[in-house]
Amino acid sequence: MPEGLPKLRIGSIDFTAARFAHATQEILREANGPQPRGIAVHFANAYNIALAEYDRRYQELMNQGDYVFTDGTPVVWVGKKLHPNQVWERVYGPDVTQWILHNSDPEKTFHYFLGSTPETMEKLQSQIKTRFPLAQVVGYECPPFREPSESELAERDKRIEESGATLVWVGLGTPKQDYEVQRIARSLPVTAIAVGAAFDFIAHTVPQAPRWMQNSGLEWSYRLAREPRRLAKRYFWGNPQFIRSVIKNRP
Image 1 (cartoon, rainbow, N blue to C red):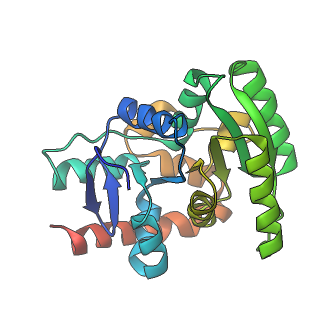
Image 2 (cartoon, rainbow, N blue to C red):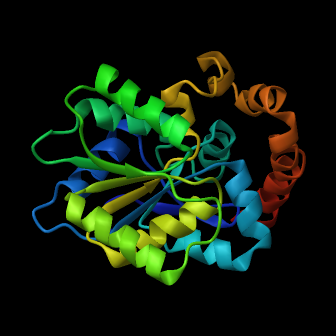
């Protein structure tokens, strides 16, 4: 388990308290270390907290993660309220992805992308080549939307290992991507990162909420209006459960 950044409980999850700049630098430090090791990085918001409150296996998984950053603005607000002596900033998965693609050393950091659809992945790779031309992408794949077999996972690990990747970006949706990040980090000496909708946002296949809505904690309403059928349960169930979890587990 990495040392240096404190972990503090918000709801049912132990979060890594950090500024955005410190978090991104810490991720790159892990990925570019002289003796790389398997590191699992998660970004958790109100929905992750709600899931963890009612799914003990998922709660244990998240609390075993090396880093769990505050992906949602409401989570940051609660962190400041519960733990005022720590520094809390939003460490948003899509922003972290873009920052690292822009700032990673092309001679040290090698990127692998896992998830999404072939159409979105193609657009994502095109955007990376245009916007982050120095980013070294060594591989990508779009697994089928079903549970993989053990042999398929072994072949996946072999492809990642042979690519020379140091950073594996995983966009498989919550909570599937969190389980996969932990599995990869246990199997390979790479930094595996669960980044949610980052692939869609960077590829411009799904619009992102305006920055003012993100900063005011209203991003969920924007996303719900864009994708009501897919996200209704996430927000109508998740938001009240998030509040209950915070109240139940407050120190």
